[in-house]
Length: 156
Image (cartoon, rainbow, N blue to C red):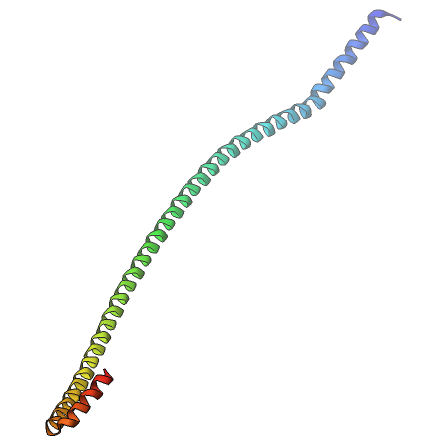
């Protein structure tokens, strides 16, 4: 065995092996690496886009939440104003109803007072007639007059 020939044979075999790897093995490996780099870059771009989209969505959610809170406070304020207005209307209606009831009661009282006065006038007139009759009778009969006075005194 000649060492030079072995070295030359190994060098040629190695050169063929390198040529074979460069020709058939390296391009698919290189292409796989490039595809992986591209997928990683696309993934990073997608992640950054997703991050921006998330930030925008959060800002929109915060804006919507602020608007909702403002609308809710406006609705509550309007409801409070309406309730206050309804209370004031109810008070005014109650006040006017009370005044109407008082006026009606006063009118009834005035009517009752007038009726009682009329009754008293009728009774006074009746008593005056009875008294006049008795006076007239008593002037006719002194004895009967004394008896009548006694009866009246007893009645009183």
